[in-house]
Image (cartoon, rainbow, N blue to C red; front, side):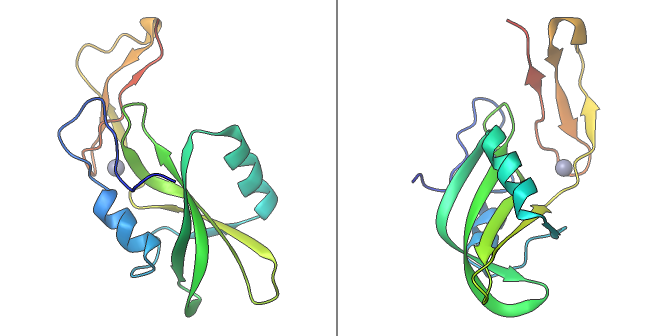
Length: 138
Ligand SMILES: [Zn+2]
């Protein structure tokens, strides 16, 4: 298991690391929390691209008891955690449950020099400033 630390290849800061730590310590509720079907969570996790953090906690809006949980955090191509992810835990009936959350509902704005035909899409979120650049070229 890795430490919670973005490993960016570009960009000046790791905007969500501290916020994600507080969520995964069960100190604050995951923002924009939506419970999802565990099979949907499994399919999303199976597609890959998230980093897994085990032995974490979740504080949910509908339950003031913190539960043990496993988080799967999404990352940008640049290596930052993008502030979203899937969290899974089991409830008191020992059934698996899952939810999606997002710290920011990103609104990417294309940057200068974008060349989508060559797969170069520089972008930043206009709400939080996250570098959302995608380079799918060779
Ligand atoms: Zn954003």
